[in-house]
Image (cartoon, rainbow over all chains, first blue to last red; front, side, top):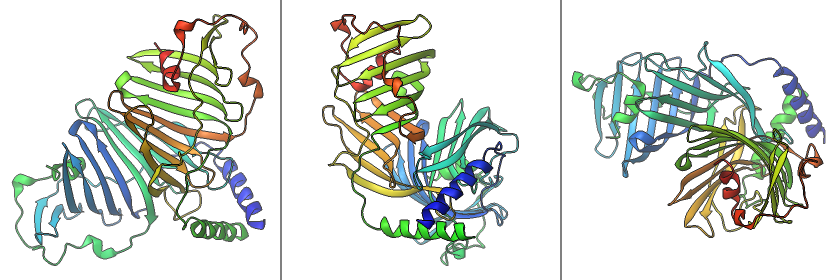
Length: 218
Length: 218
C-alpha cells in the first residue's frame, strides 16, 4: 500500500514537472539495446542488437534481416574517431576493414528541432501502463528531407527515429530493450582474427551512417 | 528517497511477476483516447479521438485526416447492439443513419493468439523510461490475413494493432493518451438534431468495422 501511494506521488510529481515545455535532449552516452529497421524503398527489414558509446564515438551492430526477400546477417564495428569500419564474419573468421568517412551521429534531439506533441504511449491511468514521450520534427541538414524523432520525457531514451527523403522514402528505426551502460566493453574491440594493421581499400569508403548499415546488406 | 526505494521495489516485483509467460488479455471495457490510423493502400492517414464502451458495445469516433491527398473530417457514433451507425455533421446539423451489421470488435488479444515477444519500449534502467509490452500474432478469421497486436503487460492497454491482408496490405492503428473510463457518457447519445426515428437506407449497410471507419472518408 505504501509503495502504491509512493508511486502515485511520483506520478503526480512527474505530471507537475512535465507541465513545463520539454527541451531538446541528449540520450545517455552508453547504451545497449535492440533496433528494428524498416526501409521499404530498399525492401530492407532488419532487427539489430547494438552497443553505443557516444564518448568514444563507437558503435557495434549485429543485424539480421531481409533485403529483397534475401536474408542477410552482418556484424559491424564502427570506430568513427579512428575512421575505420570492420565488417566481421565469424563463420569465415575474416574481417573487411573499410575507411569510414562519416560523422558520428549521436542519439539526440537537435537543438533546432520543433516539438510536435507530448503524448503518452499507452495509458496514464495506472502504474506501468504508459510511457510519456515527446515527438520532435525538423529538417535533415544535407539531404532535402525531414526527421521525426520520438524520445522519452524521462531519460531521453530513443523510441523511434523516422527519416523521410524525397529520393529514398521512409527509413524507420524502432528501439526496444534499451539498457543504460555497456555490458561488455570489449564489444568495441575488433575480434582476435581481425588484422587491424591491414591496409584499407579506399574504393569501399563509407561516407554515410545509413549507407554503412545498408551497404553491407547487399 | 523513500519513494525511490518503493519505486525500485515495485519494479523488482514487476519483473518477478512477469517472469511467468503472459496470457491473452482483455482491455479495460471503458476507455477514451487517441488513435493514429495508417492505411497506405487506400492512402488514408487519420488521427482519431475515440470513446470506447465494451459493456454497451458502443464507439464514438471523431477523425480527421487525409485520403488521396484530400482532407476529411468525420464524426461517427457506432451502436453495435442496436445495429445503427450515425454519421454526424455538426456544421450542417445533420445525421445520416445507417444499418450497422458488423460484430462489435472488443480491444483484446484473441485466445488463440501466439506470443511473439515481450519487449520494453524504451529502457528499464530508470523509472518512467520504459514500458513493458507483449507482441502477439495470429490469423484473421474471415479474411486471409494476419494480425500483430502490441498491448501493455500491465493493464492490457492497446499500443498498436497491425492487420495485414494480401488484398489490402497493411492497416495500422497506434494508440496514445488512453484514459481508463468514460469522460462524458453522453458521447454515446446521438446529438439533439439527429432524427433517431428516421428510417434507414438499407443500401448503405455497413458490414465491417474497418469499412465503417474508411467508407465515410470517401
